[in-house]
Length: 174
Image (cartoon, rainbow, N blue to C red):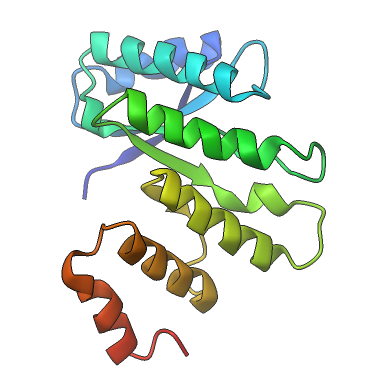
């Protein structure tokens, strides 16, 4: 497969170091919505950073389809609106920047809380419904994987429910 660079951001030192590596290549790159000002707290700030990153990468010969924007999942235990801000950012990025991908490290959402798997799975399904098309998750978590297969089916990413039916036949929902 094609290597993926994890990750570039608007942090000047990181941006300046990684841009020459990805420029003009077919490498995939995770673009973190973070700047020298720190981690954004609002949807608007995430989208603003995403816009600057995407435009900067494209202007430096990185293909749009090779960009995976990470709007940054932050723990809802530290601020109750972080889940909604993340979900809204995913939707806004996918709407504004056709062809780009979104990705996230999901488990941050539940940091410090009990029954983390429930929050993680619920957030994953909601994020997929908002357009998220890349996740960093444990593929051995059967409940998570079943929820993602069902979500993909419900939003029309599984023509004729082929993947859903295959997973059912393979007993992946048990």
